[in-house]
Amino acid sequence: MKNYDVVIVGASTAGSYFARRMAEKGFSVLLLEKDARDKLSPSYDIFHMGKEEMELHGLPKVKEGDGIYAFEFEDSAICSVYGNHPKPSKLKVVGMHKHDYCVLMNDWAVEAGAEIVYEASFKKLTYGENGKINGLVYEKDGNEETVSCRLVADCSGIPAVVRRSLPDDYGIEKFALTPKDIFYVTLRYIDFEEKRSSRYLRSDFWLFFKSWLAPSEGSDALIGIGACGGFETVEKVYKLFEKTVKLPAHKVTRIENGMTPYHRAPYSFVSDGFIAMGDAACLTKPNCGEGCTASLVLEDIAVDVASAVMADGKYPTREALWSINKRYNDTQGKEFASLMALLGSIIRHSAKANEFLFRKDVIFSCKLLGSMGNGIELSFSDYAKTLIYVVVGLVTGNIKPAELKAVINAIVTSGKLTAHYEKYPNTPDGYEAWAKEAELLWAQTGKVAEWDTVDNF
Ligand SMILES: Cc1cc2nc3c(=O)[nH]c(=O)nc-3n(C[C@H](O)[C@H](O)[C@H](O)COP(=O)(O)OP(=O)(O)OC[C@H]3O[C@@H](n4cnc5c(N)ncnc54)[C@H](O)[C@@H]3O)c2cc1C
Image (cartoon, rainbow, N blue to C red; front, side, top):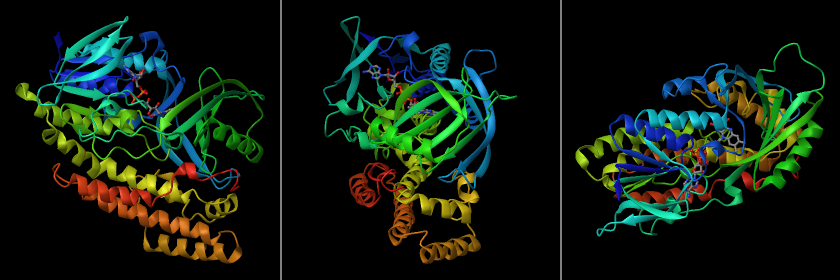
C-alpha cells in the first residue's frame, strides 16, 4: 500500500492550490480527481479573479496568448433595478478560461512534487484502531486502491464527498446542500448586433436581479444571472431582467449552466486527520458567489498550521489543527458570515425601494457598493443621511414598513453574528456551546432563496 502525508480529493482550483503549497513544504501529496485531465471543470468557460488577490496568494501568472488568459479590465459598476445611478469601482480583474486554468494549476502542483491520479473516484475513508482517519480507498479503472496518509483534504466541491462520509460523531457537520443553498448560474455568451470599435471591457451588475454584463472571449460579452432555488428560478428572473433592463441589441451564441454554494461555512473545517476546503466547505464570496480566491484565505492558514503540526511525522489531530478554525473565523470567516446575514435580509425589497435607495445613494451607496464591502468606515453623517432618506422613503411610499424592518433585521443580525464569530473558541472545548448559539443566530437571518424577486417586483 502506498503511503502519503496528504491525500486531496478533487483536483480543481482548491485542491491544486493546497497540493502545491503542501508539496512545497516537503510533504508527499497525492491528488485524486474523478474526471479525466482533458475533462476538468466542464460546466463553464470564462471566470474572473482579482489581480491583486492572485498576486497576494502567489498564483501562477497568466498572459496574453497562453490559451488561459482571456482579458483584463478594471471598470465595473453596480446599478439600480432599471440600470440607473451606477456605483462605480475600479478593481483590476483577470478573465481566464476555467478548464485551462485548472490544468495549469494541476501542473503547478506537480511541479512542486505532488502526484495526480485522474479518473480516480473517492470511495471511503479508512480508520485506525483509535478511530482516527489513516487513509482512504478510491476507485480507478474498476479497481479499488487503498492508500494510507495522515491528512485527507476534501476539495471535491459541492458534493463534499469526504466530509459527508464522516461518522456522525467525528466533529464535522455533514450537511448536504439543498437547492436553496446553491446559487444556480447561467452564462449567456452574446454578440452585439452593432459592431463596436473596441473590445467590450467593463462589468455591470444589477443587484436586484443578481445579473451582470461582463467581458468575454470568443464572443463580445456575456450576461450572467444567478438565483438560489434552481435553474427555473434563474430563467424566471432572467425574463424579467430582459424586459426591465435595456441592454444593447445582441444575439445569444452559447449558454452555460453551473452551480456554486450559497450556504454558511461549516462551523469547524477540521477534525482528526481531516480538513474541508473550497466549495466542499462553502467558501464562496457572499456578494458574488466567487470561490476560486475566497478559498485561498483558509488554505493559506491551513498550510501554515498543518505543516507545523505534521512536522517530524506527527499526526494532525483535531486539537492540533484547531487554530485553522480560529484564525479563519477571526478574519474572513466573520466577514463572510456578517455579509451573508446582511444580504439575506437586505434583498427583501421591491423595485421601487431599490430605485429610490440607489438614487438617494443610501444603503446601496457609492461608499458601500463601490468598495465591495472592503475597508469601509461609515461616518456620523452617513448614518444621519441614511436615516433621513429612509424616513423620506417611508413618508413618500417608496419604502414599505416591512422593507425597513428587513433592513433593520439585516443590520442587527449581521452585527450579532460578527460579535459571535469574534468569540470563536480557541480550543475544541466550548465549540458545542458556540455552535449552538451560532445556529440560533443563523435561524434569525433570511435566506436569499426565500425571497421571490419576480413576485416582489
Ligand atoms: C457559472 C459560474 C461562474 C463562476 N465564476 C467564478 C468566477 O468568475 N470567479 C470565482 O472565483 N469563482 C467563480 N465561480 C465559483 C467557482 O467555480 C467555485 O467556487 C470553484 O470552482 C470551487 O473550486 P473547488 O476546487 O472547491 O471545487 P470544484 O471546482 O467543484 O472542484 C471539485 C473537484 O472535485 C472532483 N470530485 C468530485 N467528486 C469526486 C470524487 N468522488 N472523487 C474524486 N474527485 C472528485 C470534481 O471532479 C472536481 O474536479 C463560478 C461558478 C459558476 C457556477
